[in-house]
Amino acid sequence: MESVPATRSHWRTFFINLSLVVLLAVSGLYAGLTLSSGRTVEAEITTRARTIFGVLLVARSWNAIHGGDFVEKRPGDLPGPPQRSPDVVGSDGTVYNRRNSAQMTREMSELVTRDGLFTFHLTSLQPLNPANAPDPFEAEALARIERGEVAEVSAQEQRGETNQFRYLGPLRVEESCLECHAAQGYRVGQVLGGISVTFDVTEAEQAVARGRRIAIGLFALTAVVLLVVLGRLVSGLHLRLNAAEARIVEMAITDELTGLRNRRYVGQRLTEELARSQRHGRHCACILFDLDHFKRVNDADGHAAGDAVLRGVAAAGRVALRESDLLGRWGGEEFLAVLPETDLAGAEVIAERLRQALEAMRITWQGKVLAITASLGVVAALPSRDPDARDAELMVARADQALYRAKAAGRNRVEPG
Image (cartoon, rainbow, N blue to C red):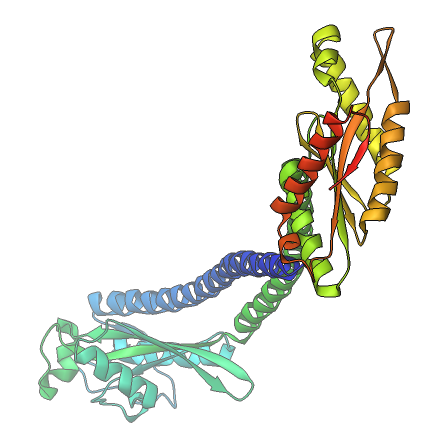
């Protein structure tokens, strides 16, 4: 009885461990997919910022290659940075102002900001134009780039209810830059400053958050389904193994030919009944009987006929004994019956009933009617008073001696021990 809870505990532990392994694998899969999705969105945002930065670099390079852009000078135009030949006059008297790459970049940023697409800012740690002074993000990013720690810097900032993605790429000194910045001690190739790009990524972040919530929901649903399936599988496996184990146990304690309990099991039960009788101060009895002249049946009609007789004896014995009694095959044509809480007088009554049942039994085999009788030895004991009666082997030995006396007295009889 004590093994049942332990077995259930083992199965429960097995189910929990298996569930944890499966849930860990599934959670790892969903976590990987969610992380991959988030990184993909982040990579796309960074690529977008790099693309904007690259387009601006191309525009600045085109301006530098052609010595600047000349645009019609209009009233109210702010003066540009100090440079060579800032104004030229056309043949029709129109004045054109030269825009270098820095001025062109700044004016483009104003147009982009006005349209609300995104913003970018030309900045430097040593700006000639105060409008190009860096904010905290730009100052830290430029310092890190100048120290050689990184090639570019990106970050996200919360501004009110929006999430802004910020990116800064470096601008390096070219020959055309020295026209304005030579006095600051710059040399070609040094980091002159940078262009920071900023745009709203609130919707993208919300999409990532929705994806995470969906992934969590799918994980929860998948986990529930898997746990239910695993539970059914483990439960089914448990039942099948229990049935197989019960079948193995049944085979281990059952005599294959007669279907009765085998010698090992009957001997163990006799030991248990003697111990129980000793605890409660009650009698216990047993009957050992042997079939008379059984060898003649085998010799005359074959072992198959003998097997049929043995099966018939088992069936007749079950009917003759009480429900509380146990009948087992002791070996060959010998049988042992364990009678709990039965004294010698009661055991003799049962043994006589059993003898009569066997004597009246008829087995039809291949058109021939077979009859058999048995000699029975009966013993009973009170283990609480008789120490010798507490040993099952001694009880069976006493019954065996009574059995031999029954055979010596002419067979087909009951002999008390």
